Length: 357
Image (tube, rainbow, N blue to C red):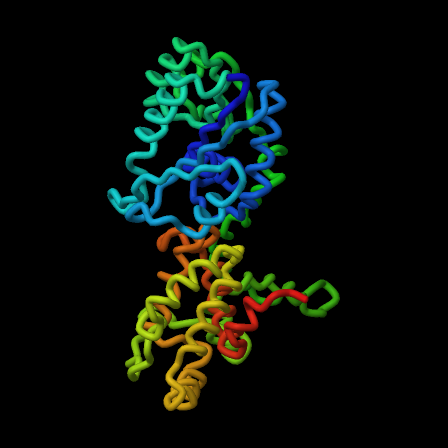
């Protein structure tokens, strides 16, 4: 068939992009315009192969293979199919399981049925080598795309590169059209040395040392110094009874779960937006006879969020691709998430999803 197909290993594409753009492979530090990225992939594949795109397959991992919001947005895009493997923790690190096997099976099946004349692979996994070799035997032209490696490092299997018919590089300029990275966290400032005593100039006028520039305060510093301004949650080690504050999960009916999932398809996933939606839904679902009392108690705790409710907020945020997985949530994202929570407390959930005029 004179058409092309693209198979994307999302773990490789976004992990390598994060390494290139900010120095580590944490995908949660990236902001991804998935619609824009898919369009870029489509346009480039059609230009390189000279064939129309039949379909793009997006392979990724998810906890218990449950689609995350980014996967739900992707799978309703035209000519995009999402295939999910497991996301597990090994030695404290998040790893994908079954993604390479699913890609291999899809590749060999497409080639065997001659579904396309050209197949583009965006991956670095050498486990796909047998599939690439089999596809070539079925007359398929294999195109391998690599993400530009950081500092000259190598991020693809050498055997896979050698077996491909065509090879292309996704460089920084191409990636940053749809992918942006938050800056790497600043290192803690060095302890300032004691100021030397003032010395007298020959004129007898004492020399006053220049003030040492203040370091950028952490969210914890700001929370302690300006709690009325910074909407910050529980400090590490701060424990206080939750006084029966109900969780969103206990306030949500099974029907509302499905409505929430549909509405979440339109959520961009930015931390402030996620926190606002969580809080607005929580307020809307409070029992009417208890709402005033619960909101008063919550307001008395500002800027801290009760411990159990705060934990649920973080678990809720992990569902969104921009936030990432729990140990990858940055300090800045935590501040934005909790700031959004306090904004949402004062905004009804219905207003967040009301049709735009």
